[in-house]
Image 1 (cartoon, helix red, strand yellow):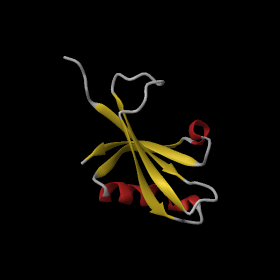
Image 2: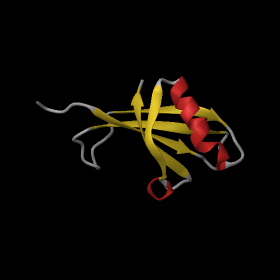
Image 3: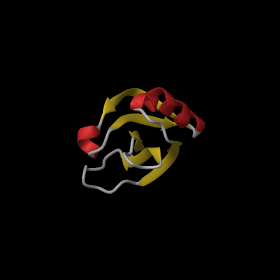
Image 4: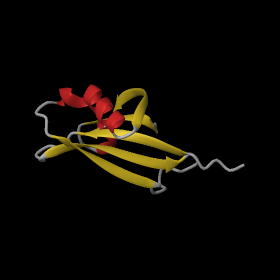
Amino acid sequence: MHDTSLLITATIAMHPNACGNTIDLTAVGADSHPSDPPAWEQEIPVHDHQTTAWGQQFADEILAANSYRREGRWWCSTDLTGYPSWTADVIAT
């Protein structure tokens, strides 16, 4: 049987010089290649915070309020995204 499940990641995006930060959700097929486009993307706006300290715990609360739960640890994804960010795997609840 072909696996059609989606792998969902959440990225805490701390945008410099922007009016707010976001949590960016991205879903890819379990058998996708890195160059494949995502199956879907969603941006959850977060009101502006002056420091990166708002990050992980606050993001967990926002994810829960939007019916997602983090699995595993947040990892620094700044090198991947090109801006200050943290990424984790999430599941829909």
